[in-house]
View 1 (cartoon, rainbow, N blue to C red):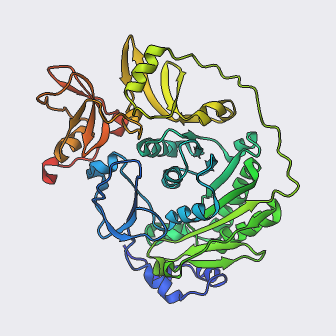
View 2 (view 1 turned 120 degrees about the horizontal axis):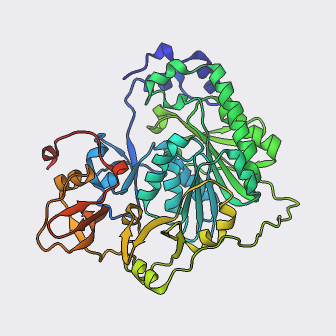
View 3 (view 1 turned 90 degrees about the vertical axis):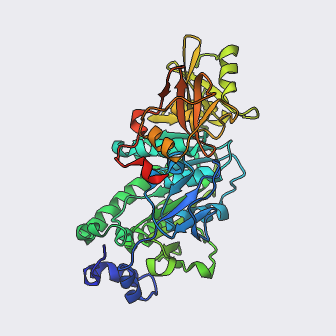
Length: 464
């Protein structure tokens, strides 16, 4: 679908002209070109990188695809081997690498996280000893965030569903906060032409005030000296450079610069108060519209608040037999901790375990990886465990071809296989786990959760 050039609002054009010296006609014409699909591969999964195209310069293992595929028909997608993400938003990786010591133990908040593009990117960069809190306030958007974080396979993350104001309960807690703020969405006009009719200046002003409120609520939870990364998919200066100035003026944030490669054709902008912004335009960066800025919280005259609290959470001690069973499902060298809550077992890093007293102030939807539960003496592994990067690759497994994998993902029956081991088996597709199945002798039960099954109807035999 194309956008008629005379439908791009004049107010939006003027907003762009005020901050950027670009060819407006080229910008308008670019909206008559199709959007480009891009993806980023998961460094924790076995990838044969079967989908390639033009390499994205500012992100590792990321590509613009030559042709979009139906990802629902690709088992690698369901296994979490890659994440389909807009190329411009992957610039977050370059911003983080230039300013943040990712080899250190960090506490990172992705405040507006769903569906999980930036959270999975952050999770690929920080180390296993860090904490990533991925938050989504809109309840209906939480399931997609949970699914994508599960598929990424780490256990150093926590998913929450809280209003930004709730993070006032964690003063000066995070080293990094990423706010990909709700916005008027003009940067997505090419990708979603139908939203252009909903755009107006009143919407921009409404979004600006909401962005200010979100930042006002969240900023107290950032440590002095910590970094705030602010982003939108809007072209409007009120939502971009204007918000950067708001942070500088009202929260004593210090502007930071990002070094650019000229070949990237990213536009650096300057705000009235000396802030820096980085804009992506379709006709220059072969991506959708995007804005990002990084600021540092002033730490002059800083004396750290006493935020240490007594550990009041009580968790059942996990017995040796249970630990041995759980460890049998994990790689031998895995450095993780076990948590028992509500008759379920979780694997997570020690940092999260130590911080649960603080994190329980939030509405926690997911912490680390749900490993499973015991029924009598039998361990029932959870679907999350199948996606874990720490899963023991020597476990009994069932190897499926494309048609069989798609049938499994539709939660159809798995045909009995010769020499298949009894009990729980990992369902594999080219070395990547899709979930669990249980061989009970005369049949193999499909343990894929109902909420994860493919609902779209298509003939699997067409894709052999």
